[in-house]
Image 1: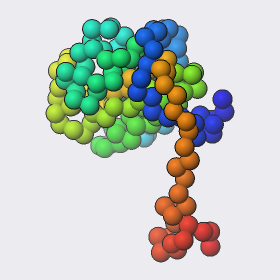
Image 2: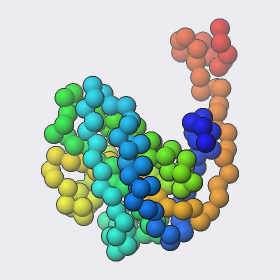
Image 3: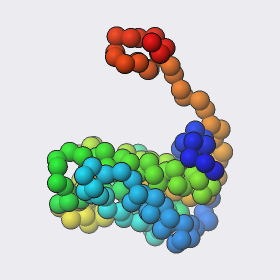
Image 4: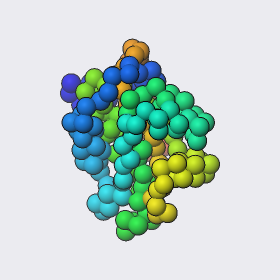
Length: 177
Protein backbone atom coordinates (compact mmCIF):
# COMPACT_ATOMS: atom_id res chain seq x y z
CA UNK A 1 0.00 0.00 0.00
CA UNK A 2 1.45 3.36 -0.94
CA UNK A 3 1.40 6.28 1.46
CA UNK A 4 -1.46 8.22 -0.15
CA UNK A 5 -3.63 5.09 -0.25
CA UNK A 6 -2.87 4.45 3.43
CA UNK A 7 -3.86 8.01 4.36
CA UNK A 8 -7.03 8.07 2.24
CA UNK A 9 -8.30 4.61 3.24
CA UNK A 10 -7.43 4.53 6.96
CA UNK A 11 -10.47 4.41 9.23
CA UNK A 12 -10.87 4.12 12.97
CA UNK A 13 -11.57 0.51 13.87
CA UNK A 14 -13.32 -0.11 17.18
CA UNK A 15 -13.96 -3.85 17.06
CA UNK A 16 -11.18 -6.42 17.05
CA UNK A 17 -10.66 -10.15 16.70
CA UNK A 18 -8.98 -11.71 19.75
CA UNK A 19 -5.91 -12.85 17.76
CA UNK A 20 -2.68 -11.52 19.26
CA UNK A 21 -0.35 -9.15 17.42
CA UNK A 22 3.10 -10.62 17.03
CA UNK A 23 6.11 -8.91 18.57
CA UNK A 24 7.68 -8.06 15.20
CA UNK A 25 4.53 -6.21 14.12
CA UNK A 26 4.51 -4.32 17.41
CA UNK A 27 8.15 -3.33 16.94
CA UNK A 28 7.34 -2.16 13.40
CA UNK A 29 4.56 0.07 14.77
CA UNK A 30 6.94 1.51 17.37
CA UNK A 31 9.65 2.03 14.76
CA UNK A 32 7.14 3.94 12.62
CA UNK A 33 6.18 6.06 15.64
CA UNK A 34 9.80 6.91 16.36
CA UNK A 35 10.32 8.02 12.77
CA UNK A 36 7.81 10.83 13.22
CA UNK A 37 9.02 14.40 12.83
CA UNK A 38 10.00 16.08 16.06
CA UNK A 39 10.69 19.74 16.85
CA UNK A 40 14.44 20.28 17.10
CA UNK A 41 14.74 16.49 17.27
CA UNK A 42 13.53 16.37 20.91
CA UNK A 43 11.86 13.00 20.40
CA UNK A 44 9.92 13.42 23.66
CA UNK A 45 7.75 10.37 23.08
CA UNK A 46 7.70 7.34 25.32
CA UNK A 47 5.50 4.29 24.79
CA UNK A 48 3.81 1.80 27.07
CA UNK A 49 2.91 -1.37 25.16
CA UNK A 50 -0.02 -3.23 26.70
CA UNK A 51 -0.72 -6.84 25.74
CA UNK A 52 -1.75 -8.20 29.15
CA UNK A 53 -5.44 -9.16 28.85
CA UNK A 54 -6.25 -8.14 32.45
CA UNK A 55 -4.68 -4.70 32.00
CA UNK A 56 -6.50 -4.16 28.69
CA UNK A 57 -9.81 -5.07 30.34
CA UNK A 58 -9.09 -2.78 33.32
CA UNK A 59 -8.29 0.33 31.26
CA UNK A 60 -11.99 1.27 30.78
CA UNK A 61 -12.33 1.47 34.57
CA UNK A 62 -9.88 4.39 34.62
CA UNK A 63 -10.76 6.06 31.31
CA UNK A 64 -14.47 6.38 30.63
CA UNK A 65 -14.17 6.58 26.83
CA UNK A 66 -11.82 3.61 26.44
CA UNK A 67 -14.35 0.77 26.56
CA UNK A 68 -13.23 -0.58 23.19
CA UNK A 69 -9.70 -1.16 24.53
CA UNK A 70 -10.99 -4.13 26.54
CA UNK A 71 -11.60 -6.01 23.29
CA UNK A 72 -8.26 -5.22 21.66
CA UNK A 73 -5.26 -7.54 21.88
CA UNK A 74 -2.89 -4.55 21.97
CA UNK A 75 -2.86 -0.97 23.14
CA UNK A 76 -0.03 1.52 22.93
CA UNK A 77 -0.02 4.46 25.30
CA UNK A 78 1.82 7.35 23.68
CA UNK A 79 3.36 9.59 26.34
CA UNK A 80 5.35 12.81 26.37
CA UNK A 81 8.47 12.95 28.51
CA UNK A 82 8.65 16.55 29.70
CA UNK A 83 12.22 16.04 30.94
CA UNK A 84 13.31 15.79 27.29
CA UNK A 85 11.99 19.21 26.31
CA UNK A 86 14.38 21.76 24.87
CA UNK A 87 11.51 24.07 23.86
CA UNK A 88 8.18 24.26 25.70
CA UNK A 89 4.99 23.12 24.04
CA UNK A 90 6.07 21.12 21.02
CA UNK A 91 5.81 17.72 22.70
CA UNK A 92 2.06 17.63 21.92
CA UNK A 93 2.72 18.05 18.20
CA UNK A 94 5.55 15.52 18.28
CA UNK A 95 3.43 12.92 20.08
CA UNK A 96 0.54 13.60 17.66
CA UNK A 97 2.84 12.79 14.75
CA UNK A 98 4.04 9.61 16.47
CA UNK A 99 0.44 8.53 17.13
CA UNK A 100 -0.56 9.18 13.52
CA UNK A 101 2.40 7.13 12.32
CA UNK A 102 1.22 4.22 14.49
CA UNK A 103 -2.28 4.48 13.00
CA UNK A 104 -0.95 4.53 9.44
CA UNK A 105 1.54 1.72 10.05
CA UNK A 106 -1.20 -0.41 11.59
CA UNK A 107 -3.44 0.19 8.57
CA UNK A 108 -0.62 -0.63 6.16
CA UNK A 109 -0.11 -3.91 8.06
CA UNK A 110 -3.83 -4.77 7.68
CA UNK A 111 -4.44 -4.10 11.35
CA UNK A 112 -7.19 -1.93 12.71
CA UNK A 113 -6.57 0.88 15.19
CA UNK A 114 -8.29 3.75 16.91
CA UNK A 115 -6.94 6.77 18.79
CA UNK A 116 -8.48 7.23 22.23
CA UNK A 117 -7.83 10.76 23.43
CA UNK A 118 -6.16 11.28 26.80
CA UNK A 119 -4.39 14.64 26.93
CA UNK A 120 -5.44 17.39 27.78
CA UNK A 121 -8.34 15.97 29.84
CA UNK A 122 -6.98 16.29 33.38
CA UNK A 123 -8.95 13.35 34.81
CA UNK A 124 -7.76 10.97 32.07
CA UNK A 125 -4.16 12.14 32.37
CA UNK A 126 -4.21 11.65 36.15
CA UNK A 127 -5.97 8.27 36.14
CA UNK A 128 -3.81 6.75 33.40
CA UNK A 129 -0.67 8.16 35.01
CA UNK A 130 -1.58 6.32 38.22
CA UNK A 131 -2.73 3.17 36.41
CA UNK A 132 0.53 2.83 34.47
CA UNK A 133 2.70 4.18 37.32
CA UNK A 134 4.21 6.84 35.06
CA UNK A 135 7.03 9.02 36.38
CA UNK A 136 6.02 12.59 37.23
CA UNK A 137 7.70 14.00 34.11
CA UNK A 138 5.88 11.61 31.75
CA UNK A 139 2.34 12.55 30.65
CA UNK A 140 -0.01 10.14 28.89
CA UNK A 141 -1.05 11.71 25.59
CA UNK A 142 -3.02 9.16 23.54
CA UNK A 143 -4.06 5.55 23.87
CA UNK A 144 -4.19 3.55 20.65
CA UNK A 145 -6.15 0.29 20.56
CA UNK A 146 -4.86 -2.08 17.88
CA UNK A 147 -5.90 -5.47 16.56
CA UNK A 148 -7.06 -7.52 13.63
CA UNK A 149 -10.27 -5.79 12.50
CA UNK A 150 -13.56 -7.49 13.31
CA UNK A 151 -15.35 -4.82 11.27
CA UNK A 152 -14.89 -3.24 7.88
CA UNK A 153 -15.25 0.50 7.58
CA UNK A 154 -15.37 1.81 4.05
CA UNK A 155 -13.19 4.81 3.27
CA UNK A 156 -14.99 8.10 2.89
CA UNK A 157 -13.87 11.21 1.11
CA UNK A 158 -13.66 14.01 3.64
CA UNK A 159 -12.05 16.59 1.35
CA UNK A 160 -13.91 19.91 1.44
CA UNK A 161 -12.62 22.69 -0.85
CA UNK A 162 -14.59 25.20 1.24
CA UNK A 163 -12.09 24.71 4.06
CA UNK A 164 -9.19 25.91 1.90
CA UNK A 165 -7.95 29.44 1.36
CA UNK A 166 -5.29 30.23 -1.21
CA UNK A 167 -2.55 32.74 -0.40
CA UNK A 168 -4.58 34.60 2.26
CA UNK A 169 -7.75 34.13 4.30
CA UNK A 170 -9.82 36.67 2.37
CA UNK A 171 -9.37 34.85 -0.96
CA UNK A 172 -12.31 32.73 0.07
CA UNK A 173 -13.70 30.44 -2.56
CA UNK A 174 -11.32 27.51 -2.30
CA UNK A 175 -10.18 28.27 -5.83
CA UNK A 176 -6.63 29.14 -6.73
CA UNK A 177 -6.19 32.78 -7.65
